[in-house]
Amino acid sequence: QVQLVESGGGLVQPGGSLRLSCVASANIVSSNAMGWYRQAPGKQRELVAGILIGGRTKYADSVKGRFTISRDSAKNTVYLQMNSLKPEDTAVYYCNRGYYSNVPPPFPSWGQGTQVTVSS
Image (cartoon, rainbow, N blue to C red; front, top):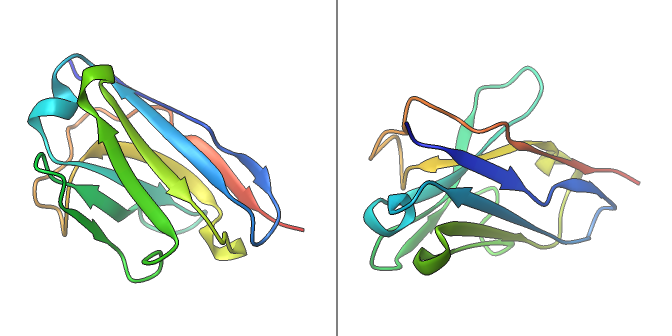
């Protein structure tokens, strides 16, 4: 079973930055497109960033230019650098397989996520 452990969330003021990390089971990051998802209260989970094995990245329009996804396959880790944070970025953030529009689909198992709260 795939294991995913997210960390790095917290409370930050608007305009601030956070760096999220996701450690996955061995070989998951090196052999799959990986993405960061988020779920705000009362909303559906959405994919905000994805990275292919070759390094190509894709972002939701809402985070383009502010978020950067990266991967370190040797460490089985995916990162999300979030800059210029806005209150509407407040959500629980998860990593899972993914790149764009449910292709590829996420693994059935999810980690616990990491809470990001943007507020003054």
